[in-house]
Length: 325
Image 1 (cartoon, one colour):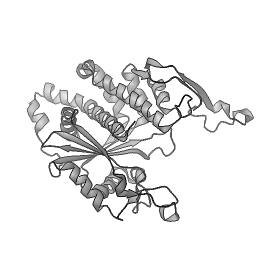
Image 2 (cartoon, rainbow, N blue to C red; image 1 turned 120 degrees about the vertical axis):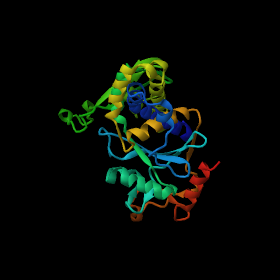
Image 3 (cartoon, one colour; image 1 turned 90 degrees about the horizontal axis):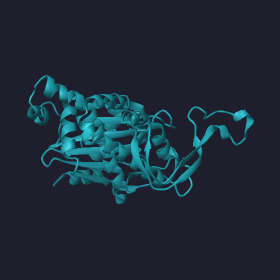
Image 4 (cartoon, rainbow, N blue to C red; image 1 turned 180 degrees about the horizontal axis):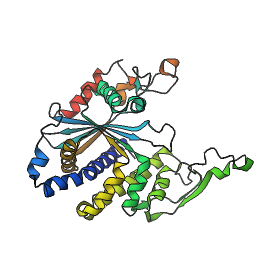
């Protein structure tokens, strides 16, 4: 799966989150309070903007069941163009080095929440970040269950004999030197199947499957399939008009999302991003603007990326050019 495809799926996930989180409020405003839909959707009073753009920072957090639970696995800037009703998404490599943090940029949220994460990204892109959204992927098991499961088409049959069992990471297995009690065997058969939340997350997290399913690329492809299945279910006709189910989805998502977007801004953003859903351009940082220096104490003996010219001016110019028609 290409970087652009991955970013597009992430954008879809953010779109789902905003629409579902704000839909109950939208219905309350328009149906209960009888406030004009036009005023609700198109008034920009109190909405933060810069040069006719709204910039949102998206962070995908690994979750408690992973090493570094508060590290940002995904860092994406979404810039919505108020004039063209289009959305540009830019993926920032999580291995970018921060001199301020003396660590990779994916640790900013863990160290200082949205304030620090926004500050670090602003330095890189040379523009303000107006809003931020962090999603804990561990919680999406609940969302899938509220949806009644999702239909996933398994491309390749595979067996994973070493899938770790949560809670048994330190089990001594009664002296078994191979620690077999820490693992379970997963088996998936090619073809379409309905998956509940637990099975879907096992499907995307498997790392030791046979038949070529033990690579990061294969894992990302499986993640794409499940996220697409969630998107299709949530944005189905029934999903958009079923208020009772919307409330359940809202509760599931609320537990997995942290944001500094207030209801007013979120309502506007959710509806505008929905309108821009077919007008999304996705980008990654150009390889020729970043370099990977030798692993050394200067970078805490980590593999990192730094700007090729020693500062972020080129990256800022590149980012700004992307947003200029």
